[in-house]
Length: 252
Image 1 (spheres, rainbow, N blue to C red):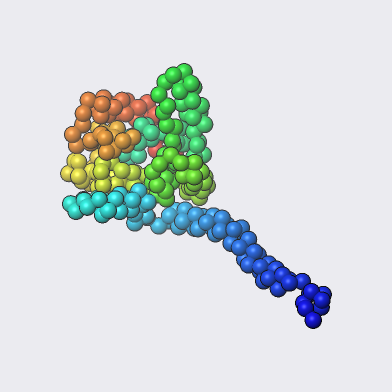
Image 2 (tube, rainbow, N blue to C red):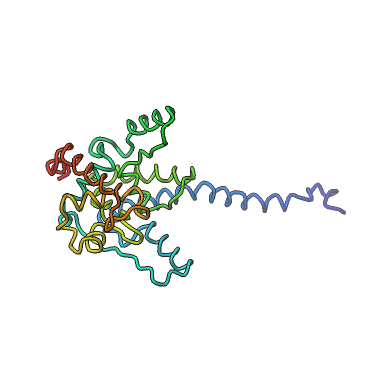
């Protein structure tokens, strides 16, 4: 007697086997985002207390050197706690990059609005990235303009602002920011360009380092061209305008 005559469905066994596989696949699909979310929270939470030994941007630059046969490339990076970095440098980068740093929660909506208005009026599209966003990008992500990267940057920025005090954000930023090709952080930049420790940077030297941040491979801190020289003077004025050293007291 055939299976059909017995009343059995020919594909019943196959269907019963496929259901567990579908459920496992569904669990993976639903569980993977949750796992990635948990990993990102642990990453950011740990770096609230642990000084990062490297960053995503440093790793990417080192891998690029290896794959392109840059045998003489050397990456310069040495962490320094905030108390061992001249206060001129965090003041300079805030004055230059993000003067609303103390007031926003990771995203400067006013700066974004102004950038859009300028672009709509025919001006060049300018970035409105905050120090919090740049810190998140440098530490955890890659360069580029894809929507995926932008979405991850927004997520990591929100986590950084939620889990770190402002003092920690600026401390990490000046330690991982790129000040030249392969030169990362205050200590490496101070030693390479000025032959001194980060704690000894003058206001003018700090302003010059801040001046190259928008494009550290294009502009040079040790051989400043006309743009960097002009921008250095502007940043020094801005440092005074936002309150000088007293501005940083609110983060203590």
